[in-house]
Image (cartoon, rainbow, N blue to C red):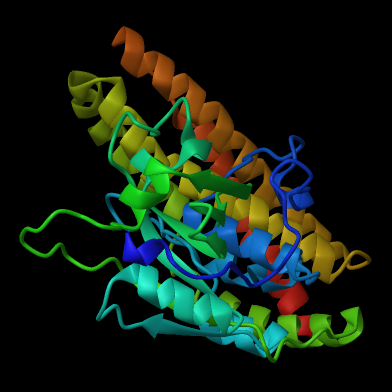
Length: 333
């Protein structure tokens, strides 16, 4: 049990799952409470540092329908550095992950790592001790003597302990073939910049221009609608478990991305009519996807037909309107 020796390491001290208040982007008032594991942890990490995650969200305007999924959107590391002075680098996992954690947390650096949700108690009711699902967590607090770890995951901050810690971090595993190392990143926060909102909006505006230029050349909602018609019968044959995986990769990524895009534009330009028009259009896509994911689930469960064309038409028109009005705002920057 030599790996259990050592003192407690924390990056942001004092975080407690009982008292932790998630960012409003993860409040019950959101259309999509959880977005995806990577974007969600960044929202909460910035929030825990006292920084504003709304400033980083312009990258969502570039999401696209990729054929079998929507873009699994992530904040670009260059944006995080430009906005907040945060540096993210890949961690070369050349020794047991637990040793990397001890070293880098002690140096004041977060470690973002792939994790098996089977061992994450915050997923109770879905994945915890039920199914092996890859996700991303960020380790903030490690106390090996107490066998306890504090981590960001999805929409909040959590702790785990005991066997969950041992198995998640592969501590004292029995001899056998080495397992494939988990992908991990180092997050350096020693040079964080806390800019005034006006300066933050200036930098975010320049990033918005860049991401708007990367928007899809054709309407991705219309392409998604065409694929949905072909895909639904096959999804119905495979049942609800398959549907939930498909819906996460498609409907949820689309809906949550455009909700974040709307939030960014509202933050960026509360007084600009074009930006607010675009935000309202993108929010309609988020709301439409929420309707779609429920209707499609019922259609799969009961194997009945679903005419989603009117809903897709509304969302596609909202994408056109949102991009047109966002373009009007971008040209004013």
